[in-house]
Image (cartoon, rainbow, N blue to C red; front, side):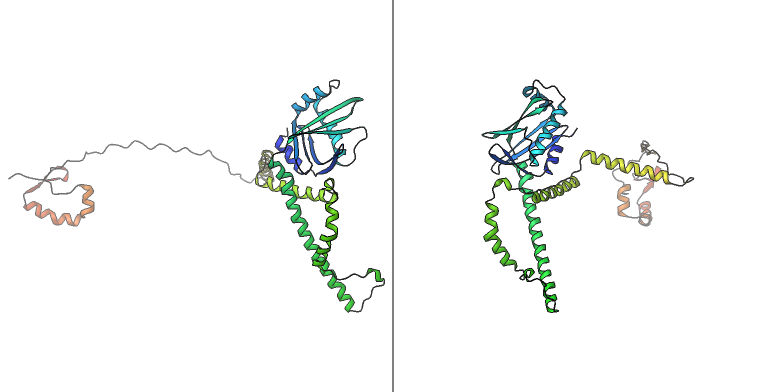
Length: 336
């Protein structure tokens, strides 16, 4: 089942549309699925939204349409068939919409018919969080402005190239057959000044309901689709990770099947566990303890102080001093 996060992600790629509820103008977008719906409405001063799952749809349908008994999916499909024509600018005459505003909330009342019986529905929208406002309006509009600026620069460059081409034709002796087709060379600064002085006031006075024309709606969809692709690239969903793993497994099986007959396949062997080391045997014979008067150093000190050649030099002096050899090669003084 598609979750609320996937519903909102699908809502992101839906374009804004100009709608009217009574005498009030809004822009709205909606996404309907078998798991519920998400509705986003704005008057360019506030933004309201409602996200509803199948359980809430079933409960509300029982409260508003007691005479209608149908599956939740039927109510969702009916709501989609009522809202989609409205967002496309093709409102049905048998359906009426009205709205009521309260502080922090917007209620949209729908009245229509279903199977010959009256059908009612209320959208209870609350104020949208700032993250949703940024995701659905601020960031897409900023990207759209960058795209339009880049488009303007490319068109300006193309016009300058066309002027250079026309000037080359004129210098080569070409002449226009109709004087009304003659144009002056394009001046970018002059064009921008005239646009700001003449066209801009007319565009700004058109009203808030014309915020998203058809061309801008297509641009909005293209920009938001790029954002969704980037989000999936950095944060793939669980289904995409599963599909990737299944695809790799199928590719490995296909490679095994494509091997020619007689080819030996390396078999994977279970990893050997490390065997514990045997217990260390006690030292035998045990070390000999030396008397306090023994001049010979301990074995650990012997390695640091000298080698066998030094011991050979010391042995005669020890024999003359009255020392005798004892068992296990140790030395001690013999009392005189």
